[in-house]
Image 1 (cartoon, rainbow, N blue to C red):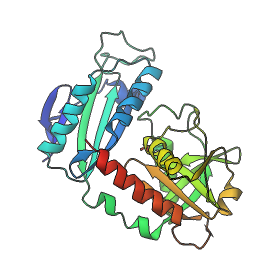
Image 2 (image 1 turned 90 degrees about the vertical axis):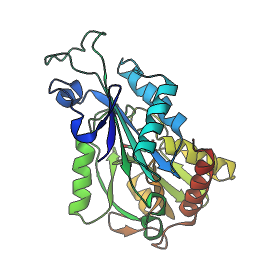
Image 3 (image 1 turned 180 degrees about the horizontal axis):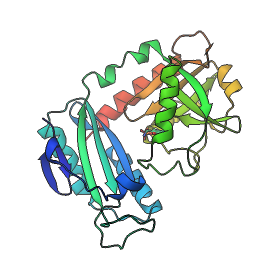
Length: 285
Ligand code: PMP
């Protein structure tokens, strides 16, 4: 049985209980982070902590733990559960005000802090890196502050189900003709030597993997253009790919039934995946 963390205690997963009045449960009033573990170490931990702070600030929630305490809890859970490859899930909600009310509760209501591990042997050896992903496009119907990493994930779940029913791997959201991002990842196309991905704004999550991958791409003298791209432009691209903390970099080979380029995973995606995994393993803590 897993050991999980709840509000200062390490507990067997069956003993970790949260109130029915918790605002995470009643209102989706909470934020989260997912940090990958490779070789038993945390990947880009500083990036995830920095985004956690941004999400908390946007919702006027205090950060319940210091940076060193966050690191200690992550490391304890990885060690106690013997995780060598997988993820650590972290969630902070606005806590339990004792009743249901739309207004934020008084500042002395303590946030709820939950962390648990998910062991995924073979995480870095994903067969999709060789086969590529097939995606469909779906209408963007999430709220307008997608830069805040909230636990309010119903529409992304619905979109995943649309992809499942269409017998493909994932869905990309489209707003005003332009791709915003994937259900749980950032989206990119490649035209010639140019990597094109939407610029950061409230319209999409500021992926921690995105930041690292674009940095590595620029370091490797690849051209990066941060701008909107349309579905038609994506279908006509040479290749496409997605990034996320647990998928790293994965090629996309088909959009709405249209094969991209050769129909095989692209060179740019393959190279970026390799660089990302190499560099991030070296920097893992
Ligand atoms: N966009 C969305 C909507 C996501 O849910 C995620 C994954 N959390 C990402 C992008 C990728 O972000 P990251 O690289 O930080 O995992």
